[in-house]
Length: 336
Image (cartoon, rainbow, N blue to C red; front, top):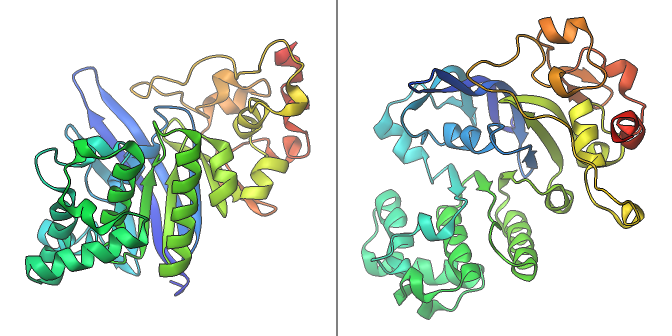
């Protein structure tokens, strides 16, 4: 494995075993993350974005579990080591900024102690020394050192999010998974948090997986974008190619649905027709076939492989035929 590759994910499958049946939340995802790179992960709710993040952290809640796949973190296969050994890896080499800062923080413990706990467990330093390190971390994320004594309910949403970010970078991890870190924040605070993450990434040389519904945020922070649908990767490409030369019909649909100034005069915004499939009984072939205007018989019966086309990786039987059709033109017949 190249020294430039810090994360190598191979055919990971994470299923939830429910009374209704087996939910295939992540179903055969493979990709590589380079050192210092940010991969944005986008897709509709329920497509497996957050489950993928929890899988990499080995934090999938019951009744879910990773049933197949390999994950190499700086060359080490992390699914083969024991729970205790992985606890030494978690937060030290790979950490996560959780979606809801309020839920990620214990309401009855001062935030400084919560961040210090991870430092004490991994670095084996006394509480006083750990709290001094927390003060430096808080300064790095734009918080006053006095905040270490406060409880979560005494902080604003933006301040709580900065505490969670400080917790995630406390041990200078190689990889940070950011799961919608700006959810429920106003646009001004969103911009501040986004800029903070970019500054911290440059300062510490971290790689990042940035999970969000917001394509505009990915344009600001990501080097490459992974488009997920029904637990699978539909397209993985450079951020500029995703926005200006999307290949997969689903990616084209997402781009066509983004409101822009040029589309302001349209009476009705475009949305992809139909609904995502039931992941207990997913389609036999391409999961997007029931919603795709270009679908043929092969799409319904054969699952497409993720193959390289130009500079992108695309899971579509007809990628070559549709790659040069602009997003709005591709979906024009549906809009009419």
